Length: 169
Image 1 (tube, rainbow, N blue to C red):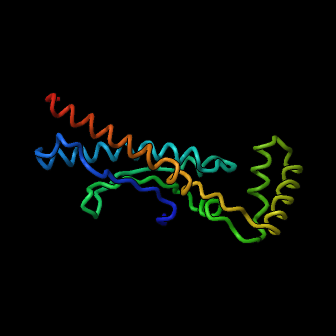
Image 2: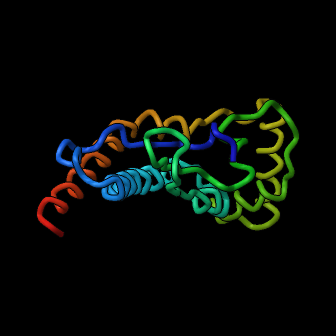
Image 3: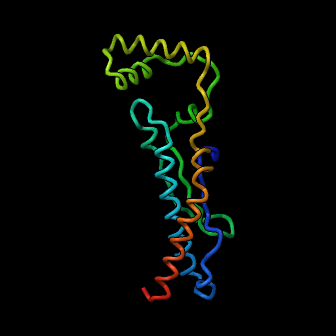
């Protein structure tokens, strides 16, 4: 998935009480903190992702933590994996889309018969052929709105890990 559909996080600094601790411990704290932030971002991005006709786009959102290529250590990310999600994210120019998926959506959304759903699908396709699809930018919205909260979650997770270390747990 391209970087413009990815929300990434890193832990800025470790708690002061870990300054003299072994490197393996600081790496474990970094990982735990970034994992906590990633899990939060993953849930938020999934809730901001358009549901669509089947909900598969929302279900495709996933997150992971990997060893970063920078000095910060680990990088967490959340992203939708559905291939067509770029279209509502970025919007489209006017074009004539296939009617069948739109009819399927209308049938599920409004409980229409197959004939009526096909008519509604045609009307939606005609609208898209004239105006395109409006950009929704749900990935950017999640990144902007949740950055501070994610950093607080990661700092709290690092602090808990540091307290557990001091307590010998």
